[in-house]
Amino acid sequence: MRLVLILLVAVGAWFLPPAPRPVQATSAPQAVGPCATAPTFPGRIEQVVLTTPGAYGNLQYRRTPLGPKTIAITIDDGPDPRGSQAVMAILESRCLRGTFFYVGQYAALRPDIVRDAVRRGHNVGSHSWSHPTRLAGWGRETAQAEIRRGFLAVENAAPGQVEPFFRFPGLGDSPGLRNWLSEEGIAVVGAEGGTDDWRGIGAEAITRRTLANMAESDGGVLIIHETHPAMIAALPGLLDELNRRGFRFVQITAGDAARRDAQAKPQTLLRAGLKTE
Image (cartoon, rainbow, N blue to C red):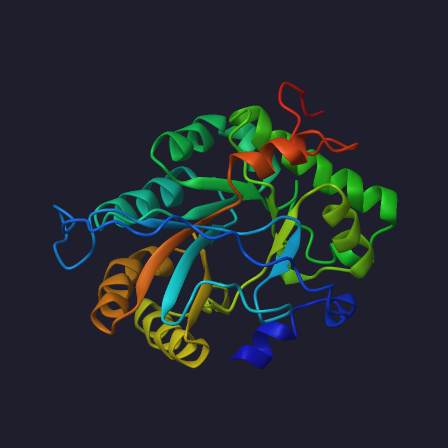
């Protein structure tokens, strides 16, 4: 499974970036009661601050520093009118929060969903403007414009609230684009594992493969896609089973200081108030 996912990555992804600075420590977790709507889950999700810039996810880069049997749920390819709302409701019913990597052209069409996600405590990053899976093969200026436009669309929807996080479509990066993002204070977020939902498999197969992938990777950043109905159908039972098997859930963030730092960079990928074309 891990080999199949890695084969989706452009050739440039094999060149590892410099090791990121150590992850910023979060405050010591305080004791919390159980989730009111799902008592086997904690009543509050812990946030883990990832140092920016950096590149995370050991399908390509170095392992995301989350700790053993710890999962950060990330959601790609929205905002989708039905998918986003369904995923948020499922997570929130277990007192969980995720990080949505939104496609800019869809965020421009449904900025209300982006704002709603932030209002409800989820984090949002960028997944490019139009989700080109061969972005790494584009010319430098064209590829940068694609990435910049995606960030601006998400930022216009939720000014000042966007994480300095970028996920390459199909995980297909290049050293040049990755280095440029690093110069702009943006962290590239890959994954430790996926759900295989993009293969068009059913809910039972998604659950089975995800459990195997998370067991193999001992947790980490998990990618799901909100645009696949089978993924939505699988998600409640999948979360419950991961929880039963002793996995804990966290939410990744860069923190306010890193967001302000990225906003001050020359190309200003997180600049609020600009309009997409």
